[in-house]
Structure formats: C-alpha cells, structure tokens
Image (cartoon, rainbow, N blue to C red; front, side):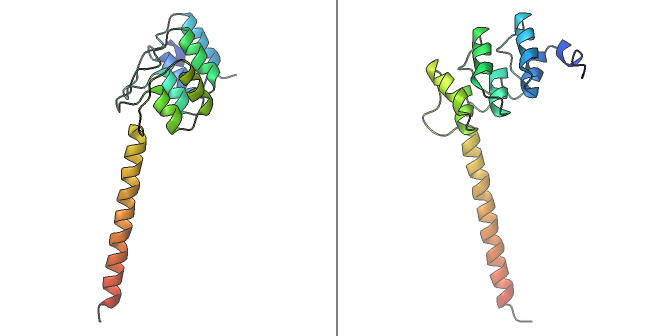
Length: 141
C-alpha cells in the first residue's frame, strides 16, 4: 500500500487530497480541522480542484460544504465552483451547487473565454498559413 502520510502533513494537504481525488484523506483532514476554503496559487479551493480534476461527484461537494466550504469563492480568473462545474461538464456537482444557491456567471467562464480566444488565434494562424501557401503557389520560379 502506498504511504501517503508525507503528502498529507503539509499545510496544503487538503488541496493535495483533492488533486489526487483521495476522498478518505480529505475527510480525515477536514475532521482534523483543515481549512476547506484554502486556495492554491491559482486561487482554487479543494472544491474547485475536485471539479476540475473530474472528481466532481456530489459527495466531495457535500463533504466540503458540511465542513464550511464557501461555494461562492472565486479563483484568480474570477470563476466560481459553479462556473467550473459547468465548464468541465460536471453535471452532478453543478446540480448540487445550484441546489445550494451557488452563484455563477451569467455568461461563459473565464476559462471558456480564454479557450475561445486561443482557438480563434489558431484559426487566424491557419488562415495566414493558407494565404502564404497560395502566394507561394502563385510565385513563378
């Protein structure tokens, strides 16, 4: 069996448990007083991490809420847990959060806006490549 004790003795242990999807470790840490609202360098809480990593089942959200997680905290991009649940298509978590009256954006999440901008940039680059290719074909040797 993997010894996880070293990972879970650090101040950000709950965030690590969330990242790994280790529900049992997360529960123990919360019972020992871990802060469910602690945020990482990106401003993500344990709730946001479990949603982003695909561990968005409602039992994680219920556990974190039971121990006082603020479901309306925002990450550094200005997204809430509900925004992330919608963006990452974690329907069970989104439903749980809506049931708790979580606040989300009326429009797309910051991540969706950023992804859309990246895809537009790729499309623009492809258009430039096609134009250069057409010019090169029309050049005479």
